[in-house]
Image (cartoon, rainbow, N blue to C red):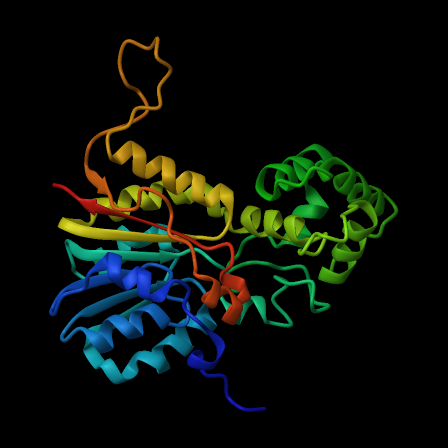
Amino acid sequence: MPKLKAENLHKPVLLTETIELLKPQAGEIFVDATLGLGGHSEVVLADFAQTQIVGIDQDAEAVELARERLEKFGKRVRIFQANFSEVTQVLGDAKIDKVNGVLADLGVSSLQFDSATRGFSFRFDAPLDMRMDADADTETAAELLETLSEFEIARIIYEYGEEKFSRKIARRIIERRERGEPIKTTIELALLVEKVVRRSKKDKIHPATRTFQALRIAVNRELEILERFIRDAVNILKKDGRLAVITFHSLEDRIVKQTLQKLAGKCFCPPRLPQCVCGASREIEILTRKPIVPSEAETEENPRARSAKLRACLKLS
């Protein structure tokens, strides 16, 4: 079997638009908080002399492939295996105080999605794992479905997947569990959901897509840590530094949008409160009044980019 190469696996989403918003300059330092296979970082390093990248990713295989891809840039690249929520700690380990830019691409990488063993996709019959860090001592998706109550399973699928058939799906999962046949694999879950969810022929996505998305978010606690990451990312920026975040579903985009609005000074408190308690303060200027989305040409070339949204901001002080 030929050795995998990062450049053959990964097409960075909204690449040109992201670089334009980050505005790299020679000699600056950037954090790629979700390095993946290094596509965005490679362009920054290649096109802007003496720029440096601190790359972060929790997937050990992605880290190895990114190291190989970016090794030609030598000491200008430092890569850490960690979760993007640990960005402040990583910079401390790298002995860096402030940076000029931060990028976070929150999508599941092609390496993970196309893996026949990681359990992210129902295209393969695999253990229902879904952990971004496959070596982490955390619960898999299958273990969540074995231990959570029917109410909790339904809540996760409804809130994180926006699936209107969440209660019926949860009921069928529990019925299998009570028969001594808990869901263990991707195909088992996909077939169960297919029997419950009725979609019209016009629907372009598989009936199990929303359920799989919901479980992945729950397993990796993706939404729980997102607002904190954005605040930490803004905090580590120098004055006039820039943050760019690419999301792939409405829940992520809403958190990014509202957190940036708070950091730009918009208050979300009820009007009757005597003072603001939501944490709004004017620390940034929002650079994207509306999210930037891929062009038709990009989505035709890379269908997985179709739901991507890019938002960015400038650090004021």
